[in-house]
Image (cartoon, rainbow, N blue to C red; front, side, top):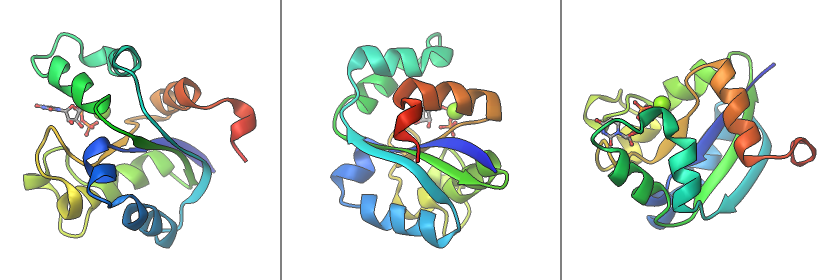
Length: 137
Ligand code: UDP
Ligand code: MG
């Protein structure tokens, strides 16, 4: 069983879509091993997205992630990393497949409802960034 890090971003929490997204995660057969609703600080957002620090959208991205509460989750499933990215859909909701989380709930590439790790190695790093081992049950 693989684990991935998933996060409902501030736009979707603010819009009241967290419950629908969590229900969909369960319907699609993921086990939620950890979950918490938190406010990410700007410094945490900058550390979490450090891989993007040279990109022109880094300032907006980190300000957005720290702009309101998020729901941080650890999901378990066979091939969880790919399965969650497939369920989220493309980064730009305009290019996301029908019925994906981003097609259903995202407004724009910047405010795109959800995050998912891009590989098992980054999943392990992102999980430990937000969760202690004892919080995963
Ligand atoms: N992003 C953006 N503009 C871009 C590319 C990305 O605002 O041109 C934001 C978007 O919110 C995305 C995040 O930066 O989710 C991280 O980008 P990445 O390429 O890692 O996309 P993801 O893995 O989230 O699909
Ligand atoms: Mg990414």
